[in-house]
Structure formats: structure tokens, C-alpha cells
Image (cartoon, rainbow, N blue to C red; front, side):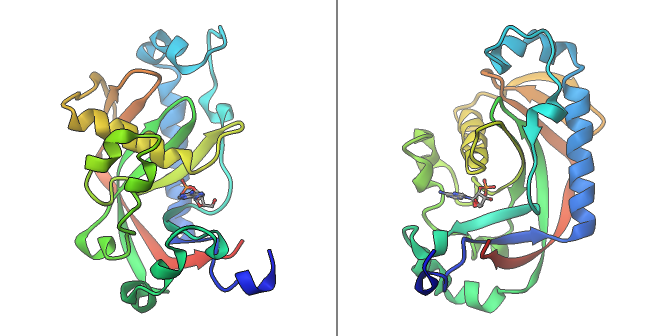
Amino acid sequence: VPLEEMSLPLFFGWFLLPGIQDKVRCTSMDFLKTLDTLEAFKKHLPDFTVEAEKEVDLEQYFQANGALHCTTKFCDYGKAEGAKEYADKPAVKELYGSAFELSLSALFVTPRTVGARVSLSEDQLTLWPADAEKEAVPLVPAAATLPAGSRAHITLGCAEGVEPQQTGFDLLEILALQQEGQEGELVEEMELGSLAYYGKGRWLLSLREPVSAQACFSSLYG
Ligand code: 2AM
């Protein structure tokens, strides 16, 4: 990347503090460990992998990398549409470097990604780009009708060859189904919350107790 394009970061977002990163990673591992032993998961395994496997080790299936964060705006060093406008927003300038409490309300797993849904507060929504959901419309048409902040998530892992930005699309797909009135098939009450199946290998665990995660609003140059 040429130096003159380096004035804008790769992305802005909330970066989880180290202690809470470990906690979220452990919670996610526990969930994956339990999920792939459930009869219901085994029953729907053909929806999950195209290969005629009898079992899948979800902890191996997903690769995690980097510090846990919730992206607000992907800027691509200024090349992404609206990057400069976002960086110039008064809220972004004012709140840069501030601490926040993110609320993680659900975990979800698809054949492509595993992630945590972040339920943004009114204050946090001031940092959310207006077009975040609309950008997803070519892939998830119903995203146009979902409320701002619906795409907010933390990527916890991706299957081989899958880009992290897929996590947000996978979340939007599940939320679109919910909005259409599909509650998912309630599969099991787990210790962490209730697990529902949305077809095509999509699982959502609504956390009984949302996880509160301390995070710093900042950016990554990469
Ligand atoms: P993520 O937010 O779903 O994890 C660096 O690649 C970070 O920017 C990742 O966290 C990634 O996905 C996010 N990202 C990459 N490309 C993106 C895009 N086009 N739109 C939104 N976020 C993107």
C-alpha cells in the first residue's frame, strides 16, 4: 500500500480487552464442543458439510485468527466507499480511544463461520455506519429491511477459504428469517441458552445471560 493511502486504517471497530477475549473464546469453544455432540446436530450434518462425513470436529473446522473485535467500518486504507466520510464523523473523532461495554446476545454457527451477535446500544449506534446493512443487500436482500446495527458481530472463526466479512452476512441471513416470522426449530435448552436451527446448517444460540464485553473503539492499520 502506498504511503499516501495509509492515512486511513484498514478498519475501525471495537477491540475487546485481553481478559474478555479469553472468556469469549472459551465460551465459543465450549459451545462448539457441545454442539457437535448433539443428536440434532448429527441429524442435520448433511446440511452442514457437503462431504459424506459422519462426524465433524467443529473446533478444528473453524480457524480463528487475530484479536477479537466488532468491525464498525471497513475502510481498506481509504479505498472502501464512504471511508473518508466515516473517519470524519464527529462521533468517530470524539469517541476514538474510548472504552465501551458491548453486549454479546447470541452465538451462531453456519457451514462458513462462527460468530457472536453484538446488540448495540443507542450510544454505540452513533458509531455505526448508516449503510452497513444496505451494503449486504446483494447477498442478503432482506438486509434492506433490518434495523441499523443488525450486522454487528464478532467473528470467532471461519471455515477454510472463507473471508471474515462472511460472518456478518451469515448473521443477517438468520435475522432476516426471524423477521419473516421463522423462529427456528427449538432444538435444546443448553446451559448457555436456547439453541435453534434455521435450516441449511445455520444454528443460533440465544444467550440466557448476554456476555458483557469491555472494548476500546479504535482502528487497525494491519
Ligand atoms: P469481520 O468484521 O466480519 O470479522 C479485516 O479484514 C476486518 O474487516 C475483518 O474483521 C473483516 O470481517 C472486516 N471486513 C473485511 N472486509 C469487509 C467488508 N467488505 N465489509 C465489512 N467488513 C469487512
